[in-house]
Length: 339
Image (cartoon, rainbow, N blue to C red; front, top):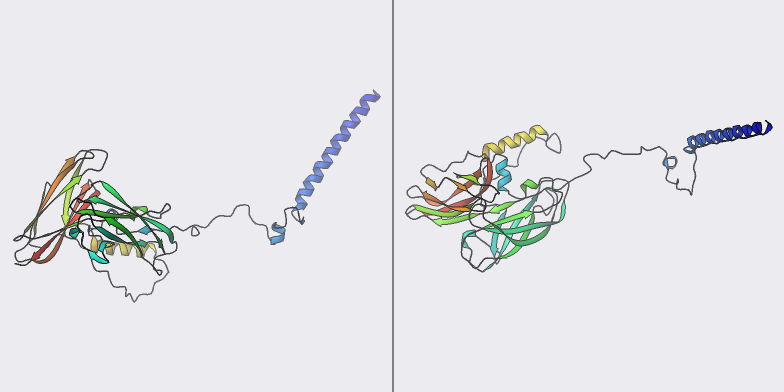
């Protein structure tokens, strides 16, 4: 009986000792945040900073900024409801520093492709930006052939050095013909990758009393058989509007209403379907649409008759659509002497 009482007493003593330790530990943890323990990893703790900081800080959305490398991109502009030309204002070729028209190229000759690269971002540059160059046979949807890369430092919109100029040497094929040049800035974290691919795809012919005919392939570069419909217009890139605006800006960045006003103004000036050929021109497309299997192509002939006595150069854009989606296009120029 005495042994049992002694054992029971020891058990109760151990329980009381454990409870006392837990009570002390809880109090110590509560007091620890008011104490300074230098040399134990607490030197930069909240007590030294003068205020307790939260464990997780929210990152403001305006801290993370992405550049927006861009070029005159026909597919992107058309997706915004705008007309396009395939005579790209941001791409041209030079021979010995002198600009050369894409219809004047000589076979097996080295030219310099020059491309302007813009930045749609006002606060994020793209350093060492790769720019990809390639070419296609003249036509719509033809196969892409790589040329190579250049790298440029692209500053923010409006800064010194903007737009950046990319260059790439290109030796024309040994086979005579017309070719389409493609230029594409490549950035892994692009704010808008849809506006990166630009094409220069033109052909020029002289009128022959007063007629000209162009024949080129239209290829289905998709994975399924589809019908490609061809549309023509006379759109050309307009002169930029005046930058003189007496109205003071309310904020440094445009608000949503101002952006919508600019978009509507662009549609009025450049909207799809608003730029027919001038009166007196007759253009036929044969055939006006093609049903093509994947990877196959068919020839299209565009026959142009100018008004009597025409003098100058007229551009004719031929755009191919699969439903509402732009597949590609060409710009045809006819030169008239007026005789």
